Length: 80
Length: 184
Image (cartoon, rainbow over all chains, first blue to last red; front, side, top):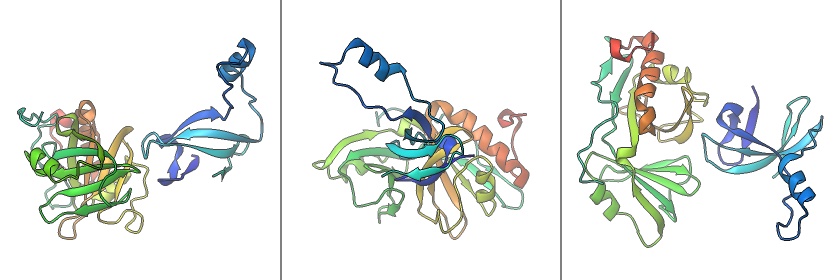
């Protein structure tokens, strides 16, 4: 079980939330090349270690927030 | 909406245990008014009981749910400062609601909900949202005369399943569950 610290609801079991994946910067849609847009949409680092992730508090406050999670140990540290 | 004849998605009689240890009632007819935007001074996670019996629940960081007796939609909405609220919606017909009560209510709810239900974290009046039997629900701890009680509401279409799941969890504490509600 992973306990995720929601900024509004406090520590929550991860089953009450949804992992939305790595934080990726959205390129400017007016100037991005097709390669940049494809990279933004589909490609991720999948790093073994600390990764900034977006989580959605699905069953609680229904807010999106960012945390850092170690993908090897599932240790979590607040990024806010 | 409020003029429509209310039909409960649960429509079950009160379920009780012989020793009064636990009970489960259908409270779907409760008037439920959702307010978003600028609302009353009730913080997220807390509730406030007004003298007229309306319970204001801080459901989300910028969202409040007003709970009142059946058929009081117009009365409740009239009492809301509509100049500040962004959205006011009567969700009475869209939500199923039940009350789980009794000395064993906390133990029964803990079987199907991952929230820490200890008194210091979820005292009387606490408002929270969580999965109950894997259904996203809004919950209010609403004790009566010192007896633990929880108002549990969910989307109307999940109501029939949810009352069966909660009744199933409460069965080991003595709740009499009729055959039509049994999950087994």
